Length: 326
Image (tube, rainbow, N blue to C red; front, side, top):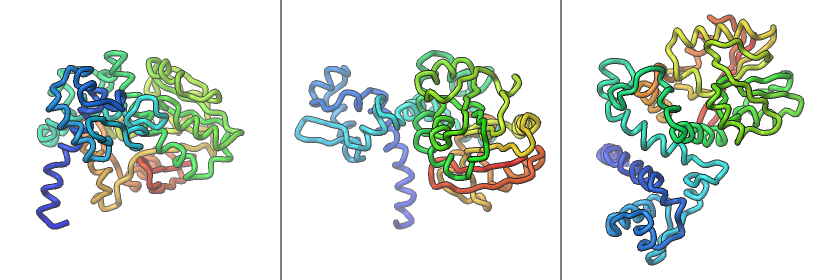
């Protein structure tokens, strides 16, 4: 790619994203196969404008076009339909309705060093209160987390040998994707999810039979007993002070020899990549108190909390893995 094409590609990148976001938000992938005319009538959309959107999706590999009939490709059928077990539709909708708008204020986030909820949505209070303001908002957010979890959790539980642990509790474990993957991999391991009550209500639809669901707040409530705790995509949400407090609480709750499994995107040591992680760190700036970290930064936090053994690995999936021992 020539130098100018790097810049041109980045200029056009948001257009491709917004094309997919809009088609998903309109429910296009849930309504195909369908003719242009029928889809326009069903969506109350201008036929010419809709055709441009559908052609855009076809050029991106998300739709097939045969005459005036559009149908899903294997990619959109797997990742952009609600019924698929590995769907990313929830995160696509969350990106369209929330993150796209927060990122519009990235410049102010960089200047002020704070998230953009108040500026963008006039929302006060805890960062995650927005996700649970309505049943639909909660569903979209948790469906998004579930989709990414289904793609990465089986790899995370394979990264380290967890066979000597007997009780796993996933703190903030959402729909139970990681707890279910661990229970499937290790038949002697009992597994539980500890999350807020509204999340537990949704998790009942997803978690496997072997996963216990426990309602609570890991910052304020006592932690359920375990010899292995899990934090998946949790630490990157919070400030250094809250991270230190949570790690200290987990260390105090573990028996000697117990462990903490962390699933987060890891920055390279020189912080120059991977691209998905540097972009996710900017995403954290826009919508949370936290950031992405290097393995050395996590190791320093974990050793400060009292953990004596820390191992980390780049997994090649959407999150990486760290295992710390008491």
